[in-house]
Amino acid sequence: MRSVWPRLAATLALTAACHSAFVVATPSLAFAQAAAKGDKASVTSLIQRGSALFDDAEYEESIQTLSAALLRPGTSKQEKIEIYRLLAYNYIVLKRADEADAAVRGLLVLDETYTLPPTESPRFKDFFKATREKWEAEGKPGRESTDSPAAEKPIRIMHSSPAQVPPGTLIKLTGRVEDPDGRVRAMQLAYRTGADGKFVLVPASYTLGEFRAQIPSDAVKPPLVEYYLQAIDKGGLPLTSRGDAATPLRIAVPAAQKGGVLSSPWFWVPVGLAVVGGGVTATYFLLNQRTSTVTIRVTE
Image 1 (cartoon, rainbow, N blue to C red):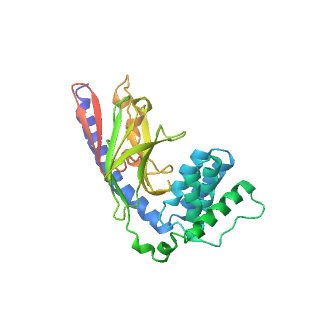
Image 2: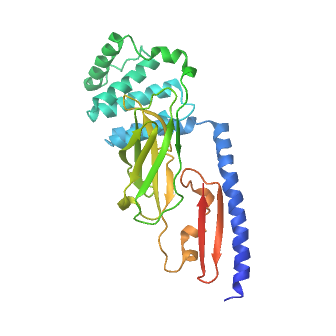
Image 3: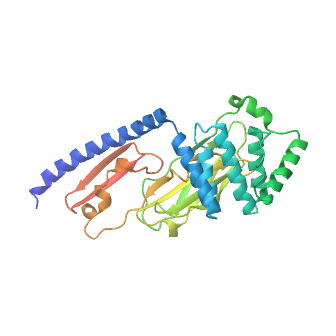
């Protein structure tokens, strides 16, 4: 077996080099293609999915999907109006009046002449009407900001996470928010085990621009954990996010393999295809001849 190791080591070194080049090049290429095509298709599909989830009474999932669409760069005015309408519907059904009020106001700021169709449910029409009356009585707050949107400074969430953790680990997430205009009122964490299923949405601790949140240990199972963070305004609507329901951040949770790492299917998956902890910039392999194992370490 010892005579095999030099050749295996050379093969792994070549594979590592190829993977490193792939990891570095692939995100840039993906972003370039996205920039060339624009985010229209993704925004449209997210709105359609959010609408379908609402029709299926999956209200929380609809809100998460529509929030992702709302924060996509390049979302048009008409798309935002539709997003706010659907968000308001979800919040009204869930009896979350403050968020519903904020969504209707967001819509009216974009188009104060907007009215629901006559065939719409009286439940929604009455809520929209009441919110419009309050908004107009208050002097239509928010309208002035649409005339000079460049005046609002961008909000940034600064955060990094571990590339991987053992199963059953309590994952503590921390970071800070750059919010020049002081619009952020709270932070939220959404997480789930694996790449399917519902996200669990929980509040994060947020004080003086710093936030802390935790993914509970019972949710940390192989092969991975997905999550995203979002900053919300005083009305409960998202202002910006790090990841979202459609493109979450990932932390690998490797399982112990009886046959060693080489027998794990995760080892042979090109790591450049996965987003780990918000972004991967380098990959390298360490070969342990004594224990016949290969360790993969990913750094951000």
